[in-house]
Image (cartoon, rainbow, N blue to C red; front, side, top):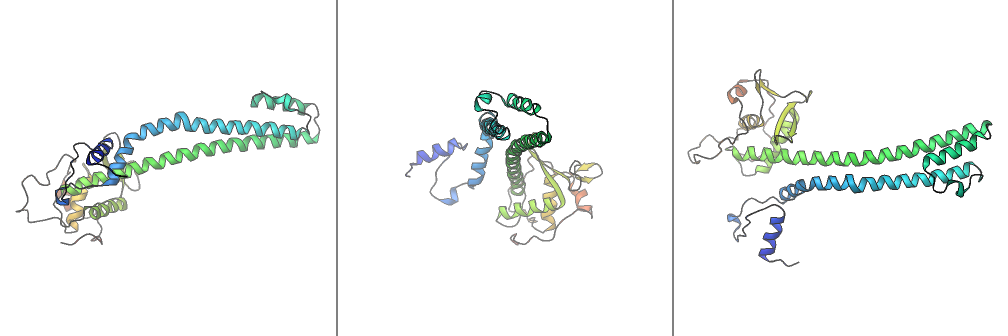
Length: 278
């Protein structure tokens, strides 16, 4: 496929990227993350996918299963009645009406065999209901898994912003983000608040409770990140070459870092392998 520069700009614009400029020198280009762009685009389309699933896909699958059940029900009733119940007796009848016809047939001959027939019909009905329930659980599980993927993506993006705001040693932000996320997950239960669009730290053993910095202060992700990297010796101490506006707190809340440093019971890992050295 051959595309013009205008085609590429139009394509990126449709994915949510505005004011795109194509430059020749990579040094002049902004940091590019294709996965982040695609995931961001899919996030905007999620309501459409959900609506399509609930209004079209699931009803059609349930309708097909119901039709299959009705056909199986009629065939089994004909077999169980030894052909005494004909197709013409069941044609155009609902499942409830078919079962009523069979119940009337059984009542005509209440010997020992009728109880076995009733049990077979009960087993058939329960098996079909189990198939429908399993189908619902399968799709609900897939939707739940997709929600977790979206939350994980937002958490990594949120931590990426925190890492970029800190004056850290090393050039690979992805490694720092991975180390920070892994350390948080080892000690706390990270929860993405979809309504507030922010990360919350909860107690690992009791996710209903927020993690505490001290008795009166909640532990924020920003405070945790600052002290985590300080503990690894990765925070720059010589800021003489930094701009005055670099690494300014942009509103995520730093908490009380002094209280955090003075505590000895906070869970910090040793130096994480793979993070670039000083």
